[in-house]
Length: 112
Image 1 (cartoon, one colour):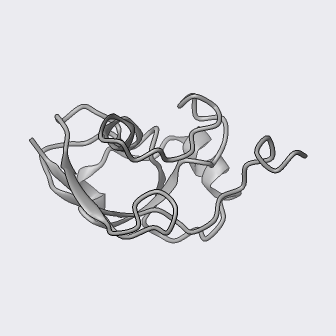
Image 2 (tube, rainbow, N blue to C red):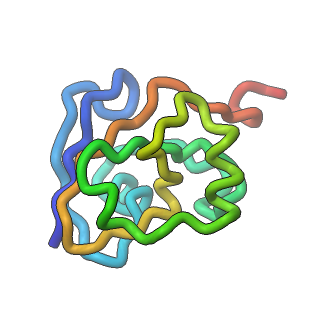
């Protein structure tokens, strides 16, 4: 079972933490199931960027991005080469280190 190390985030995980989740689980599912309430405004349907994460270690173990995810990531705040939408990034057997960006673009939450 892979381990996900979550780097500190002021709102979702102030101290940082480590969780385990079975391979085949998305990063978003793993975080939510372990009490880290990352935003996922589209209910994990790959229609927004609120669950954007940066995979600091273990990026290559995740499945390839599809075109829809790539297009959405272009709109994410703080995009980096190791960025993924956590609702689309499926865990393999490799441990990961994940950084949740400080900001997200969530028009519903921001009352747009």
